[in-house]
Image 1: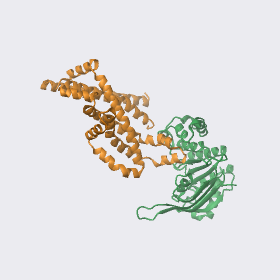
Image 2: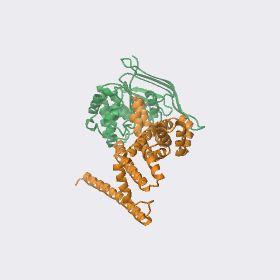
Image 3: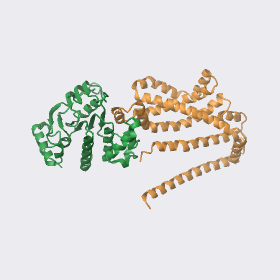
Image 4: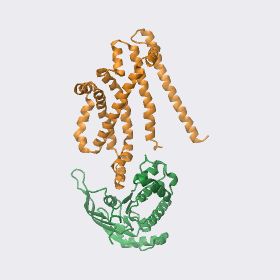
Length: 261
Length: 256
């Protein structure tokens, strides 16, 4: 057998065993949950079976898919806005000492401002609108993206910049082919932690000021102390976010790093 | 005839660290090059050769003096190709994309194909630079510089840290490309033999701050320079008149 084939087999076996471990770990969690539910025997801690039944029922006959879709759309909008603005701010502050000195304190301030304060202020100033909600989520995420990308922009290789300048490559092509590829690892790091943060804040924004979405539904069930449906919604949402990570982020990251062998 | 390049650098200094004296890199260095001439700049390392090339390339504008490049026949600004000491290929772009980057997009395809063929790398078109050997990377870097049809080609010790055979091949390749499309070349090296093999003219530089010590035509037809003995004879003659070079550009007795 060739070395490459052996390597492929080894790596596919590794992937299989990693997947098996993950499934095993999740099965353990479900088992612990089940045991605890039986021991407690309360409506406040439904068993895994009850929750999955509720999940199926909500999906087929309820508004789960609709609310999930609405919330995901908000997550996507806030995420894209935050990534674009945060990346732009990060590049400018990483490249220009003046801008960095001018606005560094602003970033620190924003980083430490509680999400709740930003959301409340956005609703007070701009009303209970979709734009205010998405804007508030984006503003929560922008400083973290900017700080991460700024790190990358500070570490840009001067040699490549000189090459591009001496050959008159032009600003736009330099940004696209020379600068951005050096920033991708930082942007991916920001995107990953960003997605996790953004969807959590979106739920709070929905709970506080909107009339649909996963956050709004959870608030309704909270008023009814309906833990079963709260858990059903949570599981659906966590699963969707994980699928986005697997199906979107990881392939994109592999693509961006395909020159590294 | 108007020279292709006139450079007069009166003063170039780097600010010293807090309180320290500024470092004078160049002072009173003037140089001219005729169109189509290969000029070798020979001097000890650290004498400011790279600084000088960066000024000529327009990368460094913080100096006192003047650099004039003759415009192209169609009146356009002169094009400058640069072959850096390290190839400086973008590792995240393929060989093809690295060359296409410096070309206008609508003409890139054909030019890249021709250049890759000319440097013998047609097969490596879609490979990424980390997969190339040192010699291949240098070829791509040279192809990129020639692809823009430069009026002035700057080469900053482009063949260091390569094995002897690879260096010979790359020199031959450089001369082949240059014969196919002659252009003015400033070739920086600290290797007097390399300068004698390639150049029409040697410009010998002093240690920092660099100034011109001697300006010597190489009076030997290029096709007679394959002989190591001829080069050796020339080299000893240069060293006899410029004893200050001994030690700066290698010991008087050949080691290899």
